[in-house]
Image (cartoon, rainbow, N blue to C red; front, side, top):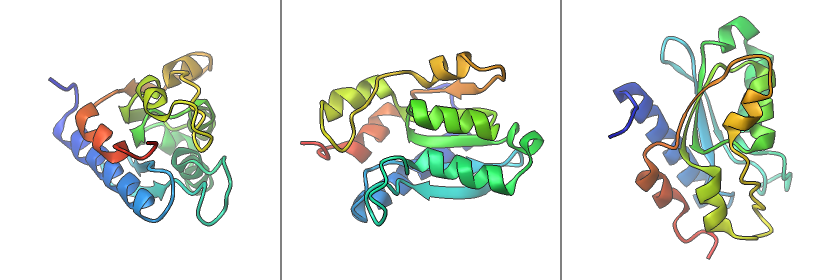
Length: 161
């Protein structure tokens, strides 16, 4: 049984849809949503690392955190939740932390993602849990995940081989 409530599950599934769209558009199959404290989706972001930028740092979560930091005050972001198709990598967790986003809900774990990607050059997964990155900071970030794993796996099925 999942720890997710109905709203969390709905938003996480929407993040899976964003990731599926990224994949269809030629990007890596990652996506996320940022939801404000009232439950409104304020940012939807696909991975942008391959098309058009060829920027390996343009992960969905990093781009979303950067957009959020420019648009909202830190005290607002502390009440926001980022929903991600997969666990934020160390870079993305750092961006989420520095933006001040207070909560993360993700589908597939970094550990399971590494099992799917192997040593594929497009996604050399680090297998470093985001909880460890957040725990080294001075501000708390609540984390739920992995959640809806079977559905998350569908997003990535067959992508790396």
